[in-house]
Image (cartoon, rainbow, N blue to C red; front, side, top):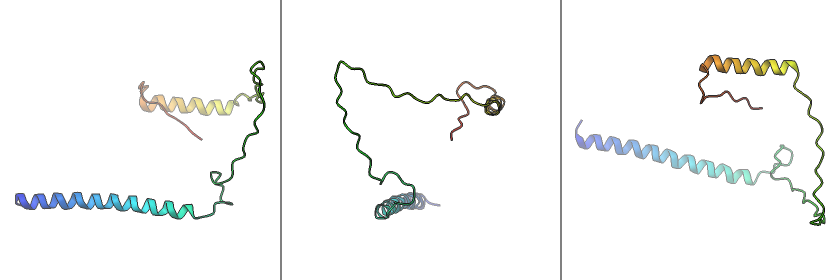
Length: 107
C-alpha cells in the first residue's frame, strides 16, 4: 500500500464516521420534533401536564415560616438490613475494599 492509498483509506474512514455521527444527530432531532407533536396525556409523562401555580401567601418578616411536619419514617426491617449487609459484603469481596470504588444501588 502506497502512502497515497493509506491517506485515502484514512480519509474515507474518518468521513464515514463523521457522516454516521451527523446522521445520528439528524435522527435524534427528527424524533424530537415528532415527539413534540404527540399528545402524551395518557402515557404518564408529567412534563406536559400543566403545573399548578402555588398560591402566594402573605408572610410578614416577624413571623417565622411554619415547617410542614413530615410523617415519621419507619426503621428498615431486618430483611432490608440483611440485604444491605450482603451488598456491602459482596462489594468488599469483589473489590477487596478499594477506597475509591463503591457499589451504588438505586431504585
